Length: 264
Image 1 (cartoon, one colour):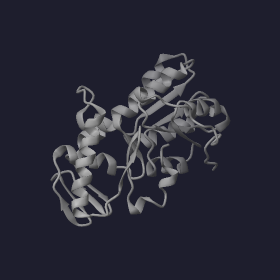
Image 2 (cartoon, one colour):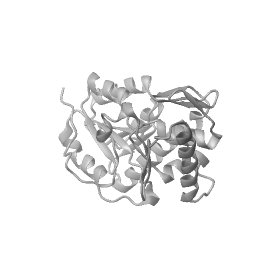
Image 3 (cartoon, one colour):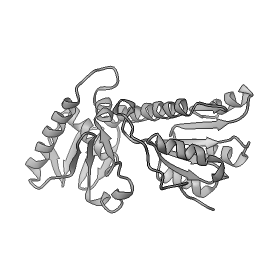
C-alpha cells in the first residue's frame, strides 16, 4: 500500500506565538490522497506538520507506533475502509480524532461522536475554524497528558529516567533533587526528545491555562534545572535553547532521528 506525504516541499507560513507556536502533528487518513491535497496544503501553510496515510493495516500500525497529536479521517466519499481504520484506532488509542464528512444528515455526526470521535466536521467548513479546532483538541490532549505525567508510570529516556509515581528522577544513574515544578518541566521536555517545547506549551504544562505567568518564569525554571543537572554532570548540554521559541531536550538515543522531528 502507498504511504506518503503530499507535496512535502510546501513551506509553512509564520505562526504567531499567540496561536501556539508548538507545531501540531496531524495525520490525514484517506483512501485517495489526491482528494485531500488541498487540505494537506492548507494545514501546512498554517504551521502544522502533516502526513497522509492510506486506509490499511499499515496506516493503523504507523499511527499507533508514531502517534501524531491528532488524526483526521476523511469520510467525504463514504469510505467504509476509513471508518473501519478509525474504529480500530479507537480500540487501541485515545489520540484525538476528527471525522470529516460531506453528509448533511446530523445522524452521521451523532454516530461518529458515539463511536469515539472527538469532533465531526461537516462540509462546507471554514479552514480557519478547522485549524483552530485541531489546535484546541491537541492542546486539551497535551494538557491531559501533562496532568497525569507527574503521578503515573516510568519514563525511560537514557541516560535519563523518571518515575512519576514516586516523583524521582536520575541522570546517568545519579538521583536528581528536583522540585515538583522542575520535575514537570523535565518530564515535558523528556516526553519527546528532539522536539521543540515552546514557552507557551511549557507554561501550560506547569501552571495550566487559568494562571498567568511571564515567559521569563519558564526561563528561570530551566536555568535552575540546568544547574542541578550540571552539578551532577559538568558537561551537561542536553537542554537546548531556541531563542524566541522555547527549548528542546537532545538525548544520545534520539540524535539519530532528531532531524526528522525537529521543529523550525
